Image (spheres, rainbow, N blue to C red):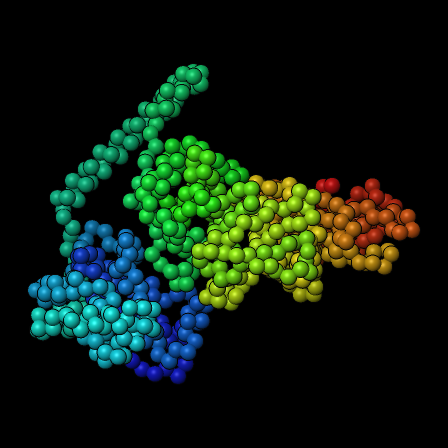
Length: 612
């Protein structure tokens, strides 16, 4: 069937949408083909049309949310194709999508003259007008219904598109069939032709020559390095100076074309370019040249300062606190440039960022505090003092995504600010989370794991509950030693609870901080006394990769008796103190503070306490 037949569905779900896409696939591709610009040529245009349709379905969770209230799977998928085709037509560097074909050119079976006439008539129209015209001429919708479909597809200028489509010269295409006729134009039936063979052979020879030259240079470089190993650094310096770094061009800067609501990858790649100077070539050139030249470039926690091989994505360019500021993302790192003090650029790792760890970036730092640029999916921004868990979240004024200055933690740790962010309902149902600034560019994401209970282990959750806030009020001062060490996230895990000999209860908390490089720090304390019970560096302990932990500490009761306290995580079923075997995961023994302790876990392994 080569038209999009509308039908009312009793219940529309992902399965119905997939079935509608497969059943109406040729018609959907033809619709996308008509909306895309003819300047692409028939080969790229038909491939791009297939790509638009093949990428029309979002992930299942997002699709289920979007289908609420839908009564027609065919109408839903048609609107999605229309919207994506219009966006692709407006993209600066459009149609970088699969499928890709090498060595062949694809030509849909149609009348070349009809194609040419239709292309000439529609070339001057906007993509929105082409979409409106296709709905009326190909899908046979009424004008009012077509306008409604355009609005439902997210096209704000639906009325203008209908009016522009109505002005097309109908007499010029009265006898045209081509892509308008399913009997003439089938985008799934194509002819294959080779590319320019002479040009391909010339390019092949050129590639072979370039590869040969590169291999020769590598060989010569290897010989030079071997011969020069015994030379001094001063003698080798001229060789290093001869290397040239590729200049990055403002014209090659990448800017995302898709909306963050319509991507399953919600991180820095979904940030649009923002700011009042995104078209300021001089500012952007200064920022790129600073990175290329390596002048005044600093790294956060060992991040590479080497300029990217390809031009990065532009996230922001504007004036912040009186200085021109630019923010880049190269896929693995973020870089912030500022005109202040002659121009400085800071580079930090950002690989594997997610909806929380890419939710804010420190965009400006001065005596007033730190301003943050929040992600486009952040709907609400508040400010908390982690040392005051009972205090409500305060307001944090934000303009154009940039917050008011946030003061750093007090030197005596009497206050510790944290941003409480709430994402859009389109992301995670008004998902609230905490981040706190520990230097660098990205604030650290704070999470919490509650005490153990019967059943499987729980996963870290957002540190916004009352118990989580109380827990962080006790441990946050320990983050002072991790300033400027590239902390990505930190979690408080209450891995054990114990009734102490005086009748009170103690909570064993492991604070795990993970860096962007993959390393981590773990510290265990017994609360509410705050007794140190062990620490570890560059380890997986207390993470999801190693949840078997044992810690010990000395504790003095109100009567003056000293005890050896020990606690293990949920898989510990027996402890050994000296020669004594004790069942359970917690112990309190008078004296014996210097006795060796170990624990047996249900997997059969034996673990030992963290170092003091």
